[in-house]
Image 1 (tube, one colour):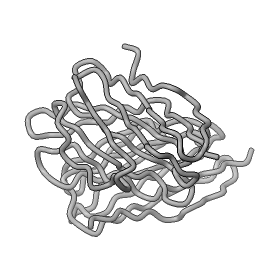
Image 2 (cartoon, rainbow over the protein chains, first blue to last red):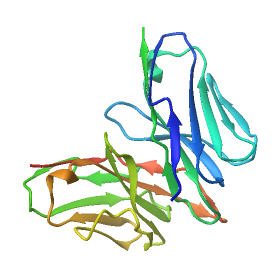
Image 3 (tube, rainbow over the protein chains, first blue to last red):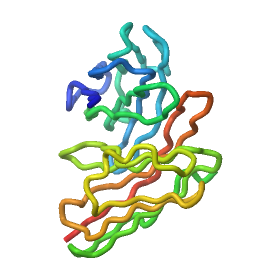
Image 4 (cartoon, rainbow over the protein chains, first blue to last red):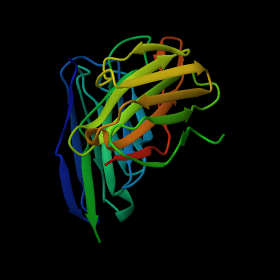
Length: 112
Length: 116
């Protein structure tokens, strides 16, 4: 079946350092979404990418969708303690469905 | 909008008991998802409804699990009988499927289930 893997599993950074998480799918995706889950919370939608090679930015966050639509990345510039949480990518497999396969997640810890 | 509503927020039960989790999706959304989250297995999709019809239940662990969506504003996930390995956080999420395109999913706060 379709699998979505993320690396790294954990990342500890000093506040102000950059952070990147990578997402890889075993199959071509129709779209990729990113979610953030704070400790003790629920996943919250960040962004959706649909086009091959698409790049989107949200303040210090940069999201990329690979040319082959099988991988994606999230880069955070100059991390802050408010960035702490687990970041999930989620892949949409086909047209006319909103079912997502969630990645394994990357847990980010930021030390002040 | 109140967002996705789940109840109860916490449930502690003994092995063998029946557990029913409830979810009210966001009004106007036509897709509903039940997920289970554990440290070991991450976030797993259990079942997915569209327009109140189960579309994909391949993630339901076994016959002890069942889910229903009698109308557009309510869904239940039932575990009978419950086992300690069912202990997890169960999330309900809803979204809109329109024009062949799926949009973002909105998650409820989750139900933390502990089976002793």
